[in-house]
Structure formats: structure tokens, C-alpha cells
Image (spheres, one colour):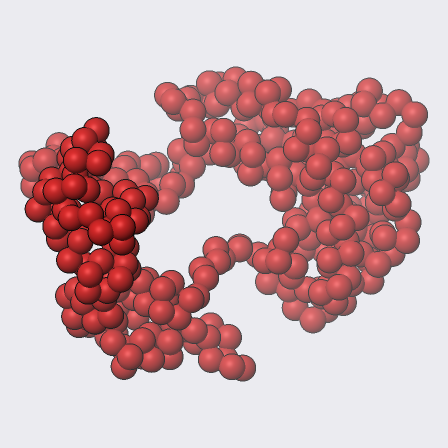
Length: 355
């Protein structure tokens, strides 16, 4: 017989309060196959505490770690000090400082201090000058682009995909019944090339569709000449196919994008967000950065087996790109104006941590 549930204990309590003894309670529910000694023990608890579920105050093994003093120590170390952001310690560091287990620190934080943990969000450094530009340009884009206009924006970006992308070693474990020395080295070693092979892609998305995935030629430098001669015409062709009624072309502040020849070509050929309109250091405003590339990487990490050559990697990326569902992309595009509003509310600073 397994552990008796709280519901069964309440049944026993009801019968006990009606005057039944342990044997009568066992006979009342023969299908439960309760052991007589177990029912007797629960009956004694009911008689002493008045409840079959709640333990008597002070019962159980005495606390040796989660004492009031230790709780105060953890509170002091685990939380940031006022006006001194980042002065807190991790649970591992707190455990080492107080000479207790990390598990005990986590229990104190969750159960005694009622704290919640939040994942840190990677973000670019934003200085005062950049913050001011982000604020001014996000405000201007909000005036220029209504939510309806956003559906005509073609967002573009470049991204490098690696054959052996980095993984979280904390979760990359090998399990064995024996000692570590008994495990084959090829199972324990995660070998990576010093300079992992990768491929650079260029692509764009919009409300209702996504363009093609364009691969940058091997060893090519994406400067203004290459971008203007090789990638930009293909991206504009995608725009015209997806948004034949008209579009607004978007690109970030990469040097190849902001070069005079690129800006002049775009001025002559389409409507676009020029280099003085797009907020600097703003991957948090581009749907490809805050959704699409992450969605592709997530699918790539789950892929088994992984590609072993660049050609295989290209085939895999094309498949992942084609199979990306459009609904989440539309949602990401629709959130663009909301993100502009959040950027303005943050005075041009970071807002990803509250999204």
C-alpha cells in the first residue's frame, strides 16, 4: 500500500469523530487495504491534535539549518542592497559563505523569505548618449508608424549560425552507475573547434509572411559593396513579393546598412527607415532579434542528429526557416509599437527585463 492521501485521512477523521475505532475504520473501506497499525497511528493523532492531516506544533525533526539567525543571514546576502545594485550573492555563493547546502538556501529563499527568482536577460550596454538617441528616435517612430503601418514594415537582419553552437554545460550531463574514471572519455569530453564553422544568413519578416533565407558567401565580408550588390536587391525582391501594395524597409545600424551608398540606393528605390530614424543598439525593437532567431536556435538545439558540414547546416536552416509558424511572427511584429512605447517609458533605457 502506498502513502495515504490527505483525502483518505479526512475520511478516517470523519469516522473517528463518529466514534469508530481503528478496526471499524479499516472494515468500512476494505478496498483501500489500509493497514491496521497505520490507521491506529492516525487515530492517535486525531485524538491528540484534532486533525488527521495537520501535524502537532513542534513535531517532526528539529530544524538545524533553517533557524531564525540563518534566515536573517540569507536575507542579508541574497538580496541586493538599497542603492547598491548587484551586491547580492547567488545561492551557491550564499551556501559557501554560510557553510550550508545550496538546497537549504533555496528552501529559505522560497519558503521562509517568500522570494521569487527571475532569469537575467542579456542586453547591450546603453550609455547616456545612446539612451537619448533611443528615446528621441523611438518617440519619432511612434508618431510615424501606427499599428496599421507596422503591418507594412519589412524587418531585416543578419545572423551567424554555428555548426557547434555553445550549450549550457550545467545541463549537459553524463549519467553513469560507476565512477567518473570508468566513463569513456568520448562521453565526458564535449570537443569544439577553436573557431567553429558557421554560416551567415540574411532575411526579413513582416506581418503575414517571411522572405527567403539568403546565405552570405563563404569568407565574404559584409561591407557596403557586398550588401548593396548581393543581399539588398534580394531583400527588396522579397518585400515586393510579400507586400506588393507598398512597404517600409527596416534595417539596423550596421556599417554596411548606414553607408552613404546604401542609404542613397534605398532613397531612390523604396520607402525605408533611414539611419537617423532607427534607434541605435536596439535588438529589443527588431522582431528577428527578439523572436525569430531565438525560435530558430531553439529548433536547431532540439535537432538530432546535428549537421556535420556547412552544406548540411544550410539545408537544415532552410527547413527550419520554412517550417517557422507565421502566427508567432505576426504577434512579434504586432508588438513592435508596444515595444517602442516601452522604450519611451524607460527614457530610452532597457525594458526587456519587464516584457
